[in-house]
Every structure is written in C-alpha cells, then in structure tokens.
Length: 423
Image (cartoon, rainbow, N blue to C red; front, side, top):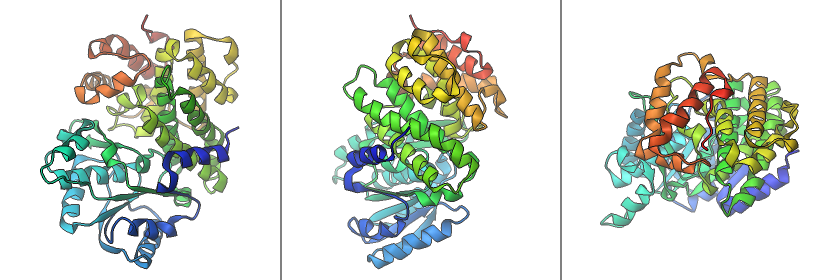
C-alpha cells in the first residue's frame, strides 16, 4: 500500500517552501507571486471550468498587489513550435517582471522555452540539449537572467511545474526535442489537485502513466548510482499510488482521495526526473507524437524496454514486480534475469489493459512502419543522446538498429521474444 504521508514528506524534501500543493490551495498564489514581481503575464490553458480557476488566480494576484498585464493563450498538446513562437512574441510585447503559467505540461513547457527565447534570442534549436541555456546566460554580455516563473499545474501528468525540462515539437517532422537545464526550473510551483476533478478519463490515465514512466525509467537508470536507495523510496510511492488509485479514479472521477493520490504520484515522478534521467520509453515517445499522447506512448513502450533492460535492473524489477503483484500470478521472488523482466512486463501490460490502454503499437490508429524508422533515426540524433546514455544498458548510435530495432518491433506486435538482450 502506498503511503500519502511518505509521499508528502518526499515532496517537502524536494521543494521545501517553493512548492504550494494540496486541495484548495489556489487562492494562496498571490502571496508567492508578489515576492517575485508585481507586473505579471498570465499564460493560460482553456478547458471546461478553467475560467473559474483563472478567476481565483487573478483575484488572489490583485489582492496581493500584482497587476495582470495580459492573458496569453497556452500551447496545444506537445507544445508545437508555432505556439512557442506566438507565446514568445506576446511575452515580449507585455514585458512582465513575473510570469504565471496555468496549464498542463505543454503550456508550462512552452512558457519556459518562450522566456528563454524572449531573453536570449536565437532559434529554439540553439537550446535543445543539456545546459545550453545556462551557458548562454553566463556568456551574455549584460549578465541576462530569466524572468521569474510561477508554474501552476492543471494535470496530474508531466511534472513540468517542478522540473528542468521543456519539450517542444516540430509538427512538420512529427519530432519532439528537449531542453534540459536547471535555469528553466520554475521559481515557484503550484498544484491545486482540485483542478483535476474535471479531467476526462483519457487525460487522467495518460497523465498517471506518464508519472509512472518518469519514476520507472529513472529507477532503472539509477542502478549502481549513489542515489539509488533514495530513488527506490520515490518510485515505491509514485508507482504504488498510481497502480492503487488510477482504477478507482477511472471509475469515479470525483474521488477526492484518488485525485490527490494521482497528484502526489505524478509530482513524485517530477522529483524522479530531477534525481536522474528518463531513457527508452521517453526517447521513443518523442517520435510518436502524431499518433499518441506522450503518457500513452511511454506506457506502451516501457514493458518492452523492461525486458530489454532486465539483466541490468534486477533489484528494481523485484520492487516493481511487487507493486504490480495483483496483475500477475508469477512468483516474483523466485525469478531472475530475463524471466523476471518478462513477468514484470506482462504485469504492466495487464494493468494497462485493465484501464483500457492499448498494449501494442499495432493497436494505435495511424501507426506505421515509418514511425519505427523515425524513432530509430531520432535515437541517433546527438541532441537526444542523453536518453541513450541514461539507459541502464547504454547504447551508442551504432547499436541503435541492432538492439532498439527489435524492441520497437516487439512493441508493434506484442511478441516479447523478439527483444535481444546485450550480452
């Protein structure tokens, strides 16, 4: 059983007083924003009921002496470059001294990247990779700084309000790329879990499985590293909360305890990706943006990467297998090697089927062999090499076709036997 108190304690350890979260906390946003600036740009999503929450934000800001200079429409799913360009231009016109974003991961990511472009200029391609924003700030002639950003999350999903990541998509090529930089971590973060009560089942499930992907992939990659024991604690609560509560919330969207559980779980997923990096599932998801939501793509891919990584991640697999114990008849304690990986993968797939997720890429409308080729090509791109390096079985670009290719073919058909393990 997952532990709410332990989850909250881990989040306090992660963010201290820089994170305001829980049920009914939105009216407190004015005070924390006023500490950072008095002239705000509000980047916001629009969804059923959003105006009520935006109204509460604006009322709190006004009460704390913060002027809203203007509202900017948020980004579409996957933060397309076209939306980034628009948001950048509007931020430039408003020239705020603090930015408040209210939205899901795509709007928060586009706000992060938009402020980078507003302050530093250049093309977004200049910043894809690790640490390039910090590098540009340090080398700027005037000692430039990014405008403080208060990120208000609306979906239990990406953890974008807590992290150093910004995912931006080129819709023409269907490829997502990533900025990874401590400089873009929001100055303050807010998540009122009550905002998620109206989220449709598909968005709820996609987001929750994205949270699992963050914790699972970082856990796999943490083997042998100094933070492994701590990452186990984060993963146990994060993955455990989703496996226990997501089926409940799918059946009853107004389940307050369940909604808080999913919020805590995905927040811990955000903590996970600040401790270590994601790898296989995320890397492949970047090439499936035209046919799958991010969380759904990661959820489909991770069981197959679990089999591929199995010989190198035995300890994590014992933990994960016990969390998914209700979805397998296998004796996790008695298995090892690839067999353990297969048993855990099958349990993960059974859970996904339980909540109505597809288990293979062939079940996804619009999926084709071209997506496999795109994913293999993208994996060799130096801008995404951190994902290859983060794998518990690290791959070089030269190894991608031989080893990642069979993983993708297995994910297409569901045939785990196609997956080759590196000897």
